[in-house]
Figure 1: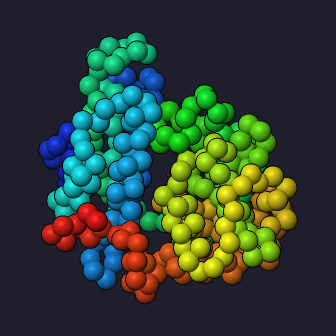
Figure 2: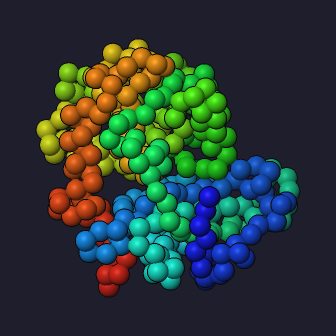
Length: 312
Ligand SMILES: Cc1ncc(COP(=O)(O)O)c(C=O)c1O
């Protein structure tokens, strides 16, 4: 359950959490017409800092562009709104959810005259797939649902309606006793989880599906590509056949919510040794090291909430 904070940012001003409501006949309610982001603010030795803020803002503006939604705010304005929100709510570690939606007005599908409302909320949030998942790994299945077919819904956009597909994947997985589902693309190749990108390790090399395999261009995915190269683990962005999952040495998810979560079984087939493998662990060490200060933030991934010029 959500724990409310005091304020939510709405179109340039702060309103009370309770007042951030939309009318039931707003366009977004019927048609899923929203674009949004999920961002983590971490508690670091230098105080709260937002992970890859600039990249998240950029993806949100990109999602809006794809869906012909002009958010009416610049990248700098949105980034500053998020930092200010964390300050106003006096949060330390938290999850930040900016969302832009087509609001109340016309009810037809073509409702370009409806206002675009932009909100940013934040709240406290723990580990998405469970605390112990980061060390032990999770049990997952291959979903009977495919990811979005090319040229149907745009997978590169993080848009509300796209998550009807994610819900089907996740609900089916949980109903069958798994933590998460891995969806294939419409060609039958591995795509991603309902809310995570996926990486497959075999013989010391990492494979991950390319952006053309109906995946969200994950910002954590991008961080992993950079970290793996730096520590000398080859990464190949390539189509991944389903059966490659079963014979992998290691498989792991990445995402803002899931961070880097190992997968220990898929369709009840044990992956590698059935627990977190060495490549996954090395990447976790690098990733969490940037956040907890044991590794330098050499990419400028952290935007300190309380710095004067906070957005890098
Ligand atoms: C469908 C989907 N894939 C992948 C991801 C991971 O993306 P990121 O690392 O930017 O959070 C997410 C989470 O936003 C997602 O919803």
